[in-house]
Amino acid sequence: MSRFFQFLWLAAAMVSGMLGGTAQAAEESGGHGLDQAAPQLFSLPLPGGIELPVSNSMLMLFLAVLFISLVVWLATRAMKILPSRFQNMVEYFFETLYNFVESLLGPRLTRKYFWYFGTIFTIILVSNYMGLLPGVGTITYHGVPLFRGANADLNVTMFLGLFYAVMWLYWSIREQGLKHFFLHLFGPKGGMKGFMGAVLVPIFIFVGIVECLSIAIRPIALAARLFGNIYAGETIIETMSHMFGPLGSALCVLPFLAIELLVGFIQALVFLLLTAIFLKLQIGDEDSQRHDTPPESLSEPGAGNKP
Image 1 (spheres, one colour):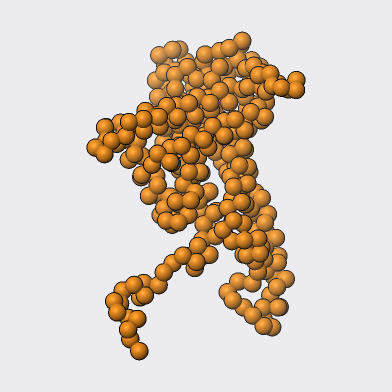
Image 2 (tube, rainbow, N blue to C red):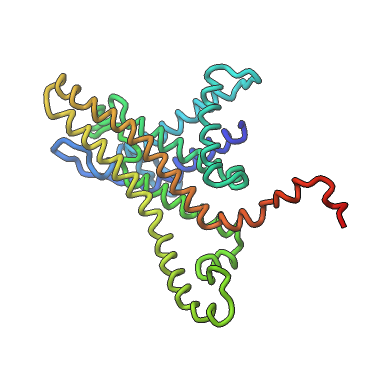
């Protein structure tokens, strides 16, 4: 478990750091509602005269990483065989998540790649919920909101989708090899050989090209789905908070906050489900063929003594 927590912190920090180059500046809007582009708060000077723009969504993502790191550190700094309530709660969360990923990928792939799936689910979930905290969108810095839900920025979700696409390609080639990777996409299916296999080669090549287009669209679809749902929810909350007076607006916002609590969890779960299924679809068959042991070889003691 401690090794997983180290992977969790490193991967979350890497996501936060690599996102720096995707921040965008936005013009101030006179009306109420959430701007589609995240406003730039300030710039950090880097060596070589380069400046790193920092948006309010990047700030929220950094706070989410900091919160996850703090929770993990507090839960693991003095681990005991008989855990405290806090340690038990954190362990229960990640063990439940591990078992869920294992039901999708199988034991071997889960042991190797849970660091990614556990991290991405946790970051998305925490970021979604932090975007609903009081003060997000209302506290300003030089006339622009200081905080904004991280996943309500298309830059963040697009990075998450593209990062997964790179990892998916690396994992697929690593597990299958370059030859079997292309055979899985373009090779004959169903073990067809001979004349029929040769006749169907153009069809399989066409299907492989379509599959490549589907693979290329996956990161865009992942990013757009997550961004669209979170941005729409936060826009509704932002708009409803200015519809009536202080008391009326607060009462109107409460039902939407309750809905967004459910939506935030569902969107994190959907992102996890789709990324795990995409990986399983590519290397699932090879995984079962290489590492499954026939049960009859283990169930008959003394079978090796039979003539």
